[in-house]
Image 1 (cartoon, rainbow, N blue to C red):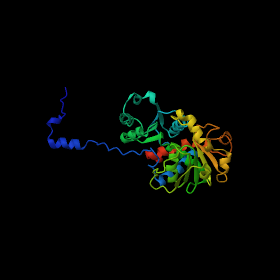
Image 2: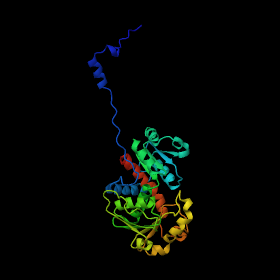
Image 3: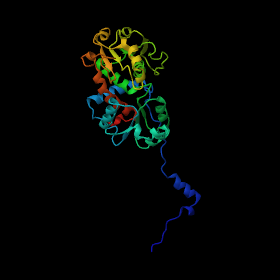
Image 4: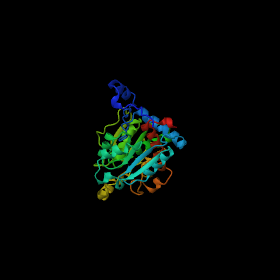
Length: 334
């Protein structure tokens, strides 16, 4: 038999033990993740670069492998068509894997705290997107997550949609600074995100809504915003000089109980050819979809040549890919 010449730890001197411990590798402190909950987290310079990068990715969709070998969790507590498809396909094009989670498939639907969900998901994925109701759940996820949290839609904000909208305007006009964008209808989460990110890009966002449906007049804009937000009651006043006229559904998810009341209140805020004629020459219609032709937008506009609505739907994918690169600090993965 061979003698065992290994020296047990307890026989080493205190100095020797300290020397061995000192040579053990230490784990680096985790970096504070960047989140996108409202859009105000971005600077004007970052927003401009993000949109420029999105245009590059649109021209060459498979040019980046920023998510190679990594996964992104997508939590859907609200129904989705464009958000799910654009994120899932975009993550695949970046070389990553989308982990799609419906709320009824998760323990969060049975009372698990969002904090616990954030702590678990942070151990497995590079980022988390969530489409939900109350903004508080996103805020709690972000407070405890060690990976970026992306708001894919909440009651108050829809920043990913606004990024696609600005990308669509930049494609059409080559730049954004000084443009006037009119939003006509309910002052909801879409209008709020257009106001926050639009003004950050230097756009004049003019929002027209009836009494009781207006965007708040004390909305806090992002630091560094150089654009302008104006609130109107008359839709023709809002669209005067506008290069694009934006609208959204009159009855959003959760508003079904007030459907008739909302349709009556918003009846004069339909985007049709007559309203487009009152805007700047060449102005086009925009809509985040799903649309209800004959209500907030006429069928002639929705399916005609005076719109870029379907471009907006596609641009969700490209803008979100650029966003993920930015939040993960990985545009070098091109």
